[in-house]
Image (cartoon, rainbow, N blue to C red; front, side, top):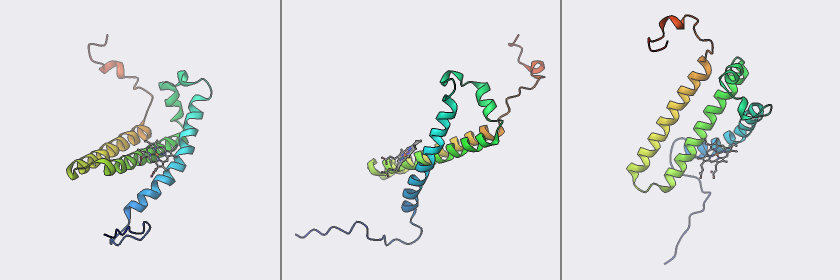
Length: 143
Ligand code: HEM
């Protein structure tokens, strides 16, 4: 019996956008941008006094500058979508049952969306200055 192996790079015959190709391109482009963002992040945060210097005041100070807010939000979006799309690839490769594959992939994107929304809210609405009147409405357990 003759076995015919399809030419690997023959174009797909399905109609509509080729989302797998765009996903493949996204992994490479976001990977290249993430190298700059992640190493820039590590160098700026650790260069001076190391990890021991990172506390509430350090982050509060950094986020007074819109440049670092944009940097951090960009890093969050690119890394979350990159990581989730990478996990989707792995799920598609290894999940044998269709319902397991679908459930895992939907869960991945739900978690990704939740973390992106929460992280973006924190980085863009963060206010380190506590209300000076807070002492008047603290619960009675706080002496
Ligand atoms: C330094 C920055 C990074 C670069 C240059 C990079 C590059 C890449 C590339 C090119 C791929 C595709 C590999 C393939 O299709 O065979 C990939 C896959 C993947 N990446 Fe990244 N990445 C980076 C950061 C990250 C981060 C921060 C995460 C997690 C949030 C992550 C999670 C993944 C996962 C889960 C895969 C799928 C692995 C697989 O298919 O076996 N990567 N990465």
